[in-house]
Image 1 (tube, rainbow, N blue to C red):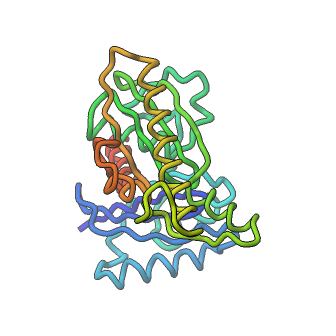
Image 2: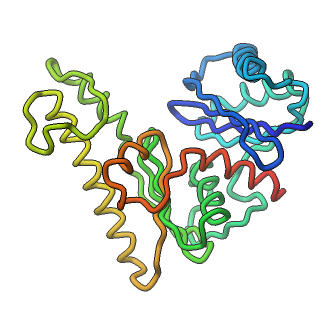
Length: 257
């Protein structure tokens, strides 16, 4: 039994996924700490894998995407020392089931490339992919070509900045407030501002992206931790919510090599 370990290194969190054949057996999430040692990372990951009932000796291959260059040497060292294999790192110029009309593909974050590959492989050739992560990113795929996209501030990051830069405003959970748009408390006011504000941001950017190609029917794919919260309240905003899109994309890219 051979497992594929997939790793998505983000600015805020690092997500690990363990695949057996085409099935994602389990995933884990830790905080991305740039000063973490390779041994710390290896011990953490091994404990996750073994406590979930898997044998680390069966991890035979590793692929990862990263938007934190300083973390890559730590990750490479950990993989080689603990799993005894050379990892595959996702780059824009590797063999992919994706083409570019984007003039500067080398500037794309690896996570956006992975999401695009997953999107076209699983859901079709004409897509708008929204990732609600540390940043809120939009990627437009048309006829299997990466055309371009949008980067907006991250939702959680914006909420934390508001709390940290004000004396009296608390840090609140992102959700649709029970009072609706006309809030009846400070907490509900913040929730209303962020919930309706981000829904409005997403709607407007989707509209403008669609307007760039008015004769193309785009499917809207959302991923990231808070996409499910929005989808639950505004179900018509996204066609599909796939919280494991990036891990699935890493598996697809591995199989494509």
